[in-house]
Amino acid sequence: MPQRSMQPSPAGWYDDPYEAGKLRYFDGARWTDHVETDNRRSPA
Image 1 (tube, helix red, strand yellow):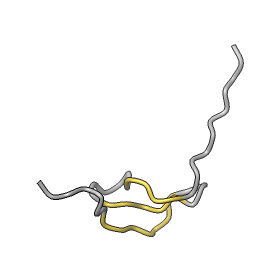
Image 2 (cartoon, rainbow, N blue to C red; image 1 turned 30 degrees about the horizontal axis):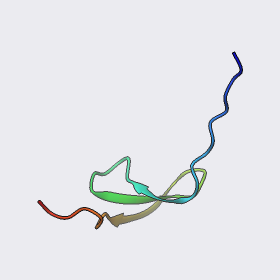
Image 3 (cartoon, rainbow, N blue to C red; image 1 turned 180 degrees about the horizontal axis):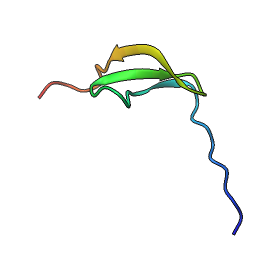
Image 4 (spheres, rainbow, N blue to C red; image 1 turned 90 degrees about the horizontal axis):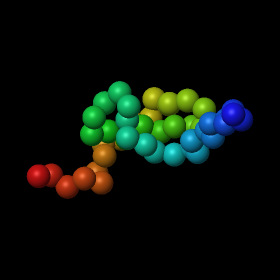
């Protein structure tokens, strides 16, 4: 079976894997210290 290489995720803002409700910037290689509040979701 051929081995499939994983494609790296493009740089951009993603759900923060460390803190719920936040967005963290991924530079294409690693998570950065840049964090923003996730305003995409409306309060319940």
